[in-house]
Length: 390
Image (tube, rainbow, N blue to C red; front, side, top):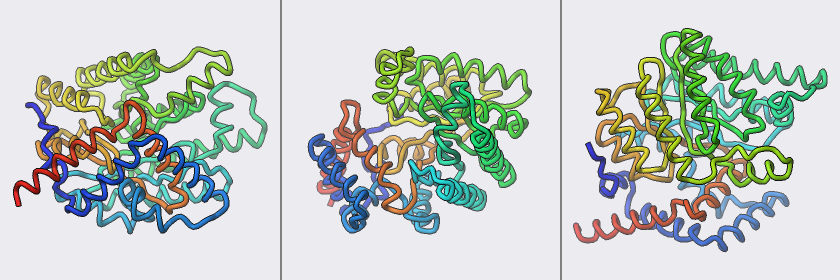
């Protein structure tokens, strides 16, 4: 079955004409690197000097990429997408805060989000960012095998305890939990806690999912090792796949510190390993659950093809497709229309605290591999189609 990703009627069915017009203006704006660079600089400065920005950010980029400031605010968006068989994953997207009170706030909010997912059938997964649950310097030192102070040892244990509590709640409410990947210098401790929690909670099915960033050249091998650990440990592997989000910084740090660059040499190699990982998982679907987090049309169609070849039904709960809210609706809604399991990552949080996430979305859309051109083409096609069908 070939999915028609060019079917804009399906892709933008939830959007009004006014919504499409706003989206067109937004993507046309962020397609300009100069405008984005200047805008990001101005917004970063405004945040530093506590200049009010809600009035300009919230009706524009925030509303397009974010569900709301709270779980309650996001319910309308969740319900609207569910009408088209597109589920939601609430992601508390407050980043870069490491004071004890900030970590506690993120932990408590994530617990609320996990419990909320258990009470809402339109939220099939919960998620959290590991660096929100502990100081990054501690995660880095543990990951690199560096000596810890007594205080840092306590922080490491507190981090592990928070992750365990989140996984425990997820298991209790029956909702799988996705543990996001981070920079490579934090990832070892994250992999370790993921494997520990999977061994506890994934005996019957995948509840805890690790995230594999396939732009790292070692991740395909690590996936195979993770599978073997699952076999040896008698549990199921939850595998979320993304291409990756930190390439420039990874390369810069490797060059600065003189260690091997962990990133693939080019996009083609990343794509090869990404798709090879999907095939490996489908070949071992009896012990692996797949979360295909991609804006890539080929990788989306490829998993569809693999599922058909293996006789896996579109709505099999072991296979999910996901894209970020506000992007790649042509993939999400057309897959859902065809009966496949689809869940949008739906960020939420206060405007000023979600700004780092929004700035990253704007920057990635200006890159050579960004989405702006594709989004503009699809939006324009739908505007034209609607005009002709009036």
